[in-house]
Length: 259
Length: 371
Image 1 (tube, chains in turn yellow, brown):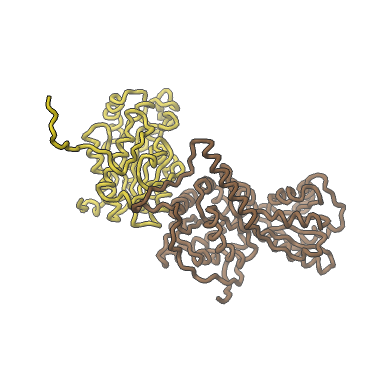
Image 2: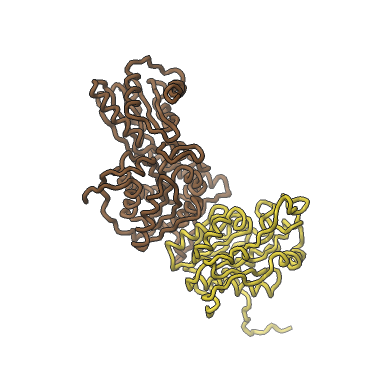
């Protein structure tokens, strides 16, 4: 076989907005995919130098190790409040939070609801993997009915543990929320759609149209006790039933937005 | 600038603006609310951020975010609200950020009431949030002093990258007094090197309070503790009254100190050689002057609007060398100068002891007084 001297066409490269260090995320975890999508979008928009990220508490607590972006680290659940403080001081900067479901939909429900209600011009990347990842797989507000976790060992029982919270649907009822959608990271098709949504969310912020949030259904193979492939399949078969993918809020101004 | 008749809370709010406050985040709570209300009108007028947060938890974390930008930021609250802020306070301290907090203290514990009290001394001076950290705590005794200390608070916060608390009580917040407001300062134009702003072509900056490696965390702890030693060396402030020839010294901060001054003056008129030490910084605590006075006086009387929270700091310095007596009112009850005067007279009549705990003697007395 003859090696050609034809210049290689690069189809896939690490975005400059990502550091080169190896992440601490488990094999098959979709945090890495979500990080990459955010990095690609900020780079494509030319916003990397102009962005301040707010990390939360959970598996993504060290997100700032992986993004080559100015970052701060919030207390558990308080990222939207911290982002509010930064964005109000620097309205011309891009400010985003990166939060998990325990962080955002349990301990931080007050902060996220009011940030959305105020129409804070921030972008929220919301990772929903149906459990508390960092502490070892406990029941989250997003855990499915019947789903076994380390704190619902016989499966989530609605008579004692209530029902999962559909965050995108809930936040979409608020006037200040301009763009609220749910996407998934379990197939390459959905990953591409997720990237488009993340781009739109950051454009909403850049154009000052209000609060934007992208909920990303994500896998947690380690804590779910599955292989990465099985985890993606489980997500597709089960999580999308309780958390249907779709656009929950697109304000008229966002609908008119040409990207 | 001429003096004007102005309410404490409003005066502090306006003083903060003139000291270059760039962003305010707060939540309504009595007896602090006028502070937030004044800023809700003035900050937007000046094009500066004002947010009424969803809770004190939200407010302190907005302050945390805004403090990461290195701008002059502040929140204000009252006791139960400050309890809720303790999480954010610890994080701000753990990230070594400057911020100003005004605590207009009310009676407690719990929901308590909205009357003036000093029962936040422990949670402000000796922590309340988790971890090893200190805050500079300034305790004004008048509206004018509250104004002056608010301006100072911003400078100290920036100098030491530390939270500075203006520890008032409901009476100073609610009282109208003549006070001279400071001149309007221009906003800072320089941003500290450590502050986030977006990379802007430079290296990324990360501000966090996490340190998973215990030895690295300990290095941070050491840095913060050494910084506190500097604060203790340089920033002690107090006011002494009639101390030169004093045989007895009353120690009281804020409103309790001010009430005590009336009693001390009345006692002086009766020929009692009594003075007053009024700590202005309750943290750092004025240990040196208290130590000197210990050598000079026959006994101390600590007056507080709580159950003897600062008393323990006084006892640590006096260390059993001289008798220390205590008189306080709790739960939002403000002592009259007469009550303090009676305690001064009692002190001169003796018997005095360094045995036992002054709180026990006070409690048995108080049972008679309040029935």
